[in-house]
Picture 1 (cartoon, one colour):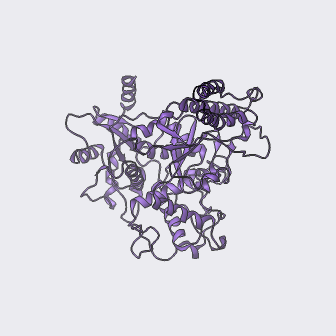
Picture 2 (picture 1 turned 45 degrees about the horizontal axis):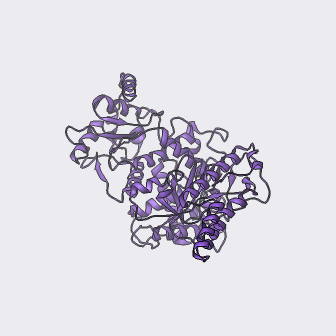
Picture 3 (picture 1 turned 45 degrees about the vertical axis):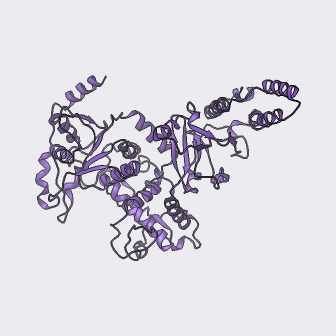
Length: 532
């Protein structure tokens, strides 16, 4: 079946237009192959033959109807401007398939048999005129509002050249789904409790009956990724509890977007001019940013994420249900389309993990700098390995595949030197050595887009592993929750600090654990040659 666009469209020199044209054409061919649509003359001849033999029209009518359903939209496509179309791939996923088939659905150009086509193709005019520009097309909040009543099986996909940021901002009950080199997809959230929580947060953040004068703000701590979003998550939870909009203050730039202290970047060097979390993530509210209002910063009682997520309890808010905390973290860190694309490409090309694998999270850097008896000691790689062996994560006479996540460059040399037979997998990137970066300096490259892409990619890649050994760290907690969310709680864990005193002023004595290994570069080169 001919699914090419008309000659007038082939003449377009717009790369975005041509990419979308090819994407639509490829998809239409796949649909044609899937449903085995016959050419019009074939269908007519067969129908006429059947009519002559049987003297009835019962066979002819369904074929004509089929042609009208599938051929007419393709004919209309010939006369529409590609720049005015958005391609929506909609599939009814087969829930009975195993996880392997679910993964095959990602390759929706080659594996149409893994999904049932529920709607052939839906075309939506997203512009009032012909926007012949090389800028990525944007989907407005109302572009596909007609999907709101669809079932949780609906999957909607776009080419990467289209930004869906505005649409996703105002459709909180959709989540990221399948992705490949050319397209990214969303799916309705199937967990009713999670969807209800997201809707409750969205309603107070964007649809509040009052105005933003009732808003409260928090400033970004600019600590670690885990600590910073503990603060943000708490603010979103308070917003839903007290029905008051919450916003992040712009009083201090966020160090993941612009550095901190002597490394504070000006607006031209920052991730974006606003130098805040909105350089990377979707807006949390319609209310404007601004300085912290001290009388409104802290609200009421402490919180507990218990069985009823929107119920206030009087005990400490640190006792949070991990699953709900993970939900709010995922809501707060919904990436903009460009960042999602970067993370996808990073995870595909930066490091190929060998599975089955375990995660070893070695947190060092500035943990020695805490004051008030809160300083934490360093642990050696050997101590992490011993903890893993006690938990039966590393078995005797086995070569383990270990995804090493660390902020200390010396830890890599230590691992390769002390345990050379292990398969150490780590991201090659700039790191500080020991505590040379100083207090809460989390971006050694000063390339803030790269640093955020790396952090989000680590969370994605760690989901491929089913075990983790770690010490006290808020980012390790994020990794664990991400892994648990992926594996349904079936995760093997071990603590390097189990039964040990971690905090204290004498922790500084452990600094000598982090040391340089001069032969590390040669070891790395040798390992790379072996892999090739």
